[in-house]
Image (cartoon, rainbow, N blue to C red; front, side, top):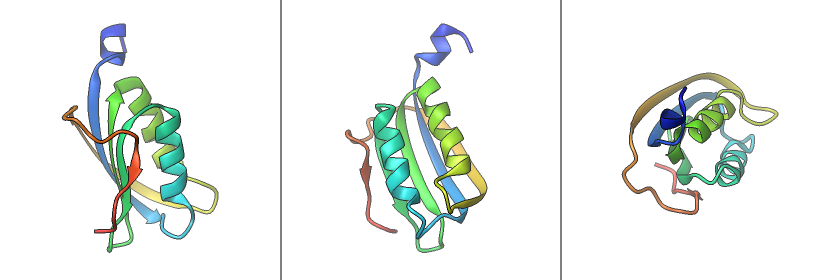
Amino acid sequence: MNAGESSRERRLHAVVHGRVQGVGYRATTLDEARRLGLAGWVRNRHDGTVEVLAEGNEARLQILLAYLHRGPWGAVVTSVVEDWTEAAGAPLPFQFKRTE
C-alpha cells in the first residue's frame, strides 16, 4: 500500500457472522473505531449478525477490519462479509445504532 492509498478516505460496510451477540462485540467495536478516529456505527441485526459501517483513512479501516475478524474474548467469528466504497459522510463520533 503506497502513501496515497493509505490516506484515502473510504467506507467499509461489514456484516459479521458467528457468535457475536451477547459477548460485548458492539461495545468493543465502538471502542476500537473511536480509538482509530473513524466515523460510522455498529448495530445488532435480528438475524444474529452484527453490522458495521465505518468511514475514514483506509489504513485505519484495515485495522478495524482485522479486529472484526477476531472480536472480543467470548466471540466466535465465522465470517465477515465486507463491501468497500468511497466515503459518503458517516456520523461522528462512531456510535451505536438501533437493532434492525
